[in-house]
Length: 72
Image 1 (cartoon, rainbow, N blue to C red):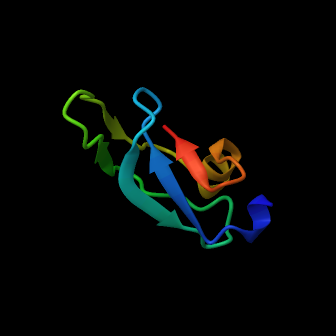
Image 2: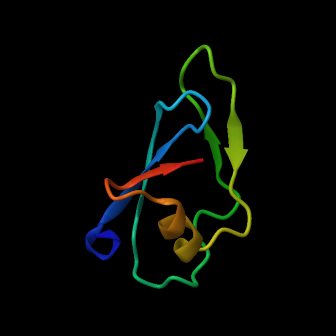
């Protein structure tokens, strides 16, 4: 199922809401993905800010469920 995904949507692990950002897959699982990008949860109650460092596309795909949701 994961091989058919075209894009992965990111969700907050703490509040389970969408972070309103997605990643389009390139097919190269060893390529760095979104290096140095800061992602902030948009809800007013949750104050999480994530910086993706040394993430590869393969690591993001491993964390993704069958629906294309990746909880960070």
